[in-house]
Amino acid sequence: MKVLVVDDHAVVREGMAAVLRQLRPDAEVLLAHDAASGMALAAANPDVELVLLDLMLPDVVGLAALEDFGREHPALPVMVLSSSEAPDAVRGALELGAMGYVPKSANPETLLAALRLVLSGEVYVPPFMVRAPAQATAAGPLTERQVDVLRLLAEEVPNKEIAYRLGLSEKTVKAHLTAIFRTLGVSNRAQAVAAAGRYPSA
Image (tube, rainbow, N blue to C red; front, side, top):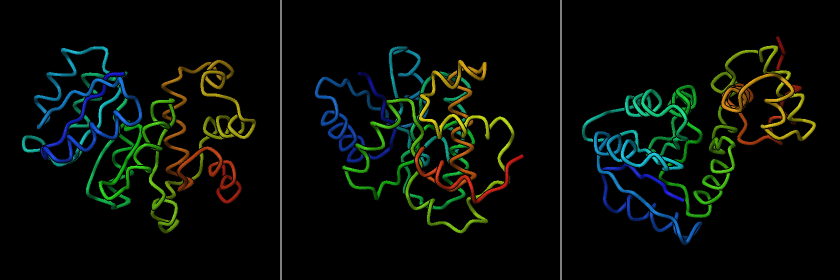
């Protein structure tokens, strides 16, 4: 497994590398201190499986780096690491295609759980989003297609099979799951199914 960590703090980079090697002892961890060097490493290493990306970098601020990675490497999963625990920041990152959002205050066990989830193709949403007010987490009613995805989710159908049944790509299914989690204010599939009845469908 090859993972790219992009953060301007050496302590954070090394800490992430240690956690990754705890998850996969044979993990190869690439380290970048800013967005430009991170983009260069991603371009030079097409076998990178995951990017851990800080949102506050010396050369790019906010979500711009996430947008850049999404544009240049659309198939590469990116998980955001951030000191911010603002719900708007989480929603903004997920809307731009992040596969997860982990606050830097998270303990190693939480980070490991998030990494396992994202590497399995799921989306990680931090638990504090579930506790956020409904008006902050609900982005409106679910669309008809999201309801279809949620129905299959309730049947414990895996993403690949959902994509096949609905005639979608797996990436599109993951995007729908991200939107569903955000709308329902939940952090995993089981919570999404349990919370679905509280929100109107299209």
